[in-house]
Length: 80
Ligand SMILES: N[C@@H](CCC(=O)N[C@@H](CS)C(=O)NCC(=O)O)C(=O)O
Image: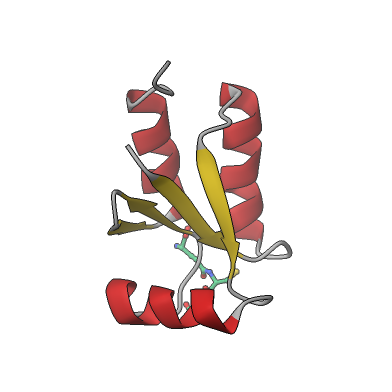
């Protein structure tokens, strides 16, 4: 399963997700910073349809809302 987090570092909702990723010890999430990469920002807009972060792409499907992302991560432990 491919997991990609669209984020920027000073976003408090992203920080909430970063904290959960750390707590869960996950190393399977690719980071995409929409403030640093125009390409990432465009992909978020094209696929997600809005510029809101955080957004977790799960096999290319966008999931918005920090609490929903954390809930999903807790229910889907990292694959070995
Ligand atoms: N309820 C959302 C709030 C996310 C949010 O407001 N993110 C801000 C950055 S800190 C944002 O992307 N604002 C731009 C927008 O909503 O278009 C969550 O918990 O993820």
